[in-house]
Length: 118
Image (cartoon, rainbow, N blue to C red; front, side, top):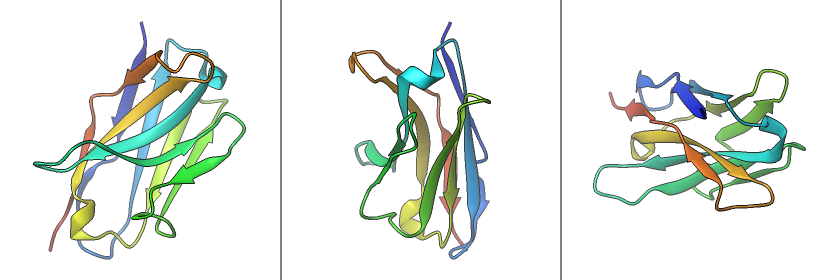
């Protein structure tokens, strides 16, 4: 059974930092591009960042220079270091695993809430 379990969300003040983690099980981790997506209230889910098994990264323009995605293939875990957080970063953050060959093989975590507020 495939599981993606996010952790690390919470309440933080503007300008603060948080580190999200996503632990994957039930998949051959190295065969998946991993990513973070987010969904703010009343908005569609959007890409935040992705990282390939080889470490190549991609970021949404809105988070470039502030967020860093990384993965530990030995631990089947990805991370999202979020710095200089803004109120508009408030959202539920979802972990995603997409197969590198068959992109229709696609798994989601249940999400973790990040609230940026003073």
